[in-house]
Length: 267
Image (cartoon, rainbow, N blue to C red; front, side, top):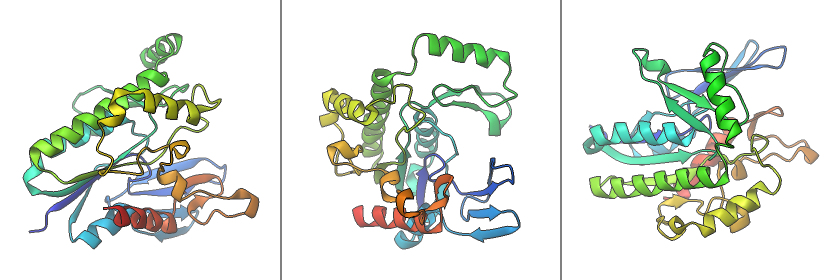
């Protein structure tokens, strides 16, 4: 029986179908966790996500826990829950961390598909959550939560914690970063430079196993890299070959192949 390759992250890892409606809005539909595709009106072009490419190369069974819009709170919790119960049948775990300003709140309940509220900085939750969540966002914004310090500390604590748990359980693993904040950053001016300085200043910087973190130390200002760096577009040359579309920077078929290549070359 094949062992598992467990992958988790945000939309850069999730298997989904992406449909751009005529009015320009984007609709994402999760599917079987293996074969996403880009649905443009009546056209569907299926392709493999990077996790499936890697699983096939390593002769492992893919378990894809990724969910579009996830923050690092959700990623940390879901992978810890899964690995702690299933570590004996796991061959490898690859965690794709996401933007550090994203926030997730576990709300529980009987609906297993709606146990988390996912928030991006400066935004309100999706319609339907009710006035109570708008009040929560207002309080967070009033106290400037999240901010650079809280976000950086929260992410690094999760990385360090899972690093040690995986070693304790004797689970092979790698970390990688999918995206860093762009226009969603609350303090966008010199954001990357500020993140780089905050990372170096943290005592966790020297505690992270850089051999297990693909692209460490993440920000290009420090010589690191994330998925976005490898599927970057060049609008000045009308080059969007790794993107779903010029308006959508998620990886397409070639993008996922490129990401898989980067991971396989690093592990």
